[in-house]
Image 1 (cartoon, helix red, strand yellow):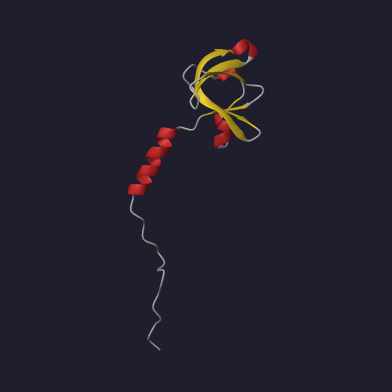
Image 2 (cartoon, rainbow, N blue to C red):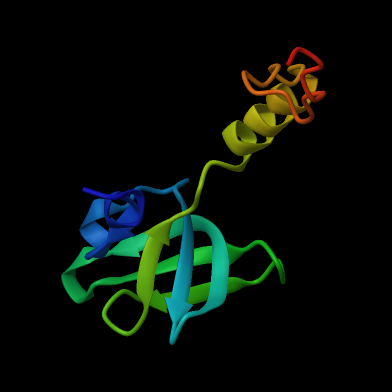
Length: 101
């Protein structure tokens, strides 16, 4: 199972209040935010949209819903990689020609 598939939400019953989600349509991110309420009987839920600060009703059947990627972990990994010195290459970039004949 790939990462995108693991993040995919198929029903509002898979969500809990406080979950971070992204709502996509035709390959574009429409909404991103925190789940504030779910109504599993009709597969709807509300989020607090992080871009606008407004409450949004999300239809899980009309949009592709993904769990938001963990931004904190990604940023920490990026910072750690930046601090790690580059590993020396096993092959030199330039090798002087041999004078032995």
